[in-house]
Length: 435
Ligand code: GLU
Image (cartoon, rainbow, N blue to C red; front, side):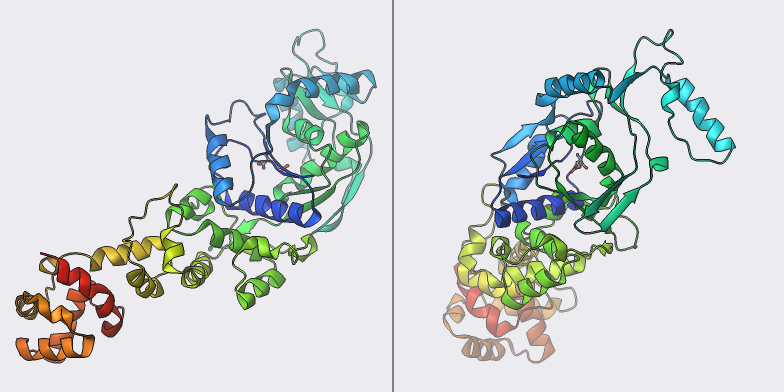
């Protein structure tokens, strides 16, 4: 079994979406079940209804959410297993207060040594603290072989007995380790590397079978720094709001740091990411940090948009987004070649599809007025482009730039862009029909 385990504490970050897509596609390849586990253990940081947003987004990315669990529904099991670990002497009550631990931390800082919890402190405040936590006893050094990073070793000196239950609720590491019981491959961001030895230690103590782990390198923003939640483009929702297809974002996240898939996607125009199932392997993903390049994502989106028929574009995402595109396939086929996203497509059409009267040009005000006057004769739009051009030139007495610039504005609403002979045949019926 594989899983994606988002926390409902904020907008879904593209780093998380990357882990979700890779996990899901590998579950298809391995022919194993895939589940979504909402990690709602951090009761204070949970945002109401965030899980619904996350599930909706996953669905837009064609990641199935029919097997989904809330981590909180497992709290009873977490509690029972903490008791089992206590009974077996693998965990212990720790009565240290915050103040006590803070003083130890300051002491360590003063002596310029790293702070480590000592098991011998556990009962110092037993008589005065009625609210102990439960800690898991870390005894040994740990190592594991990461599918991307290779062998990782954690010295006993770096590991300490850590809290698994606080106020009768499991901590993230404890709940995660228990709920990962049946996982075969766990894929997540490398910010979790330091949690893995703790989770493995818990699983070993509970006699669970071993899972493989793969930690994906963090994504860097355009400034070369870790993409924080404050970078707009780190939010999957924001990217979709820019009119990018979920499909392009998914493919882009699969190609990042994976040159084999990148080549496969671009060379074969394999734009359905499920077609990549046979090609993907966890070892392909680079261990080097990868740059998130918005321009490249736009390029990919443009390629995908171009590969789609007008009919497909019009039937897109109808439930979720209403782009208000005119149901005119010929128009869409011409205009789609000019843009990178569906929102840009809509914007371009919005310029073109306004009555001739409202199309304005400061620079060519006189000329555009002359053309508008001539075009009151709607029969001109019966002609094909060459004849239309000739007839209009003759009628208006304009030529060269003074003819073509205002004509372009009348046909497309813009001074630059699509060639006139391409736009004319698809827009003439609209212009002819207007009152
Ligand atoms: N809830 C954790 C997160 O969102 C999950 C990490 C994991 O996959 O174990 O970062």
